[in-house]
Image 1 (tube, rainbow, N blue to C red):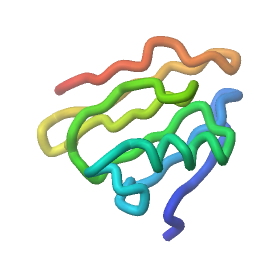
Image 2: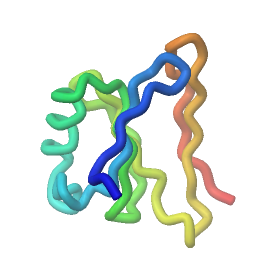
Image 3: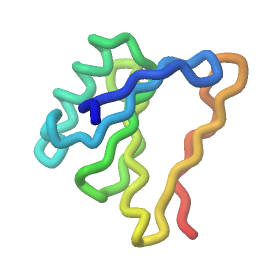
Image 4: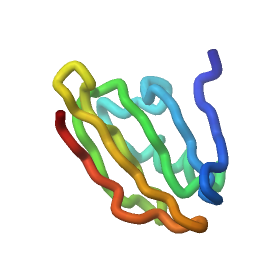
Length: 90
């Protein structure tokens, strides 16, 4: 499996990765830099199981948290615009 996947969803370029290669347990800087390098607007990641929703350098960094704890995220994309990213629980 690839270490990261980049796709355009609803006109928004999104990076998806596990996060271990970017060392997200220690800092989000490498993830943000990689996302900027790829020219994506959103970086979805996991690894830490800790929720995260923040903007770094114009990139939305999102970790929904642990699904086993009923946590997930919802991002609405409309005409290339990201609307209301949310962290939710079952």
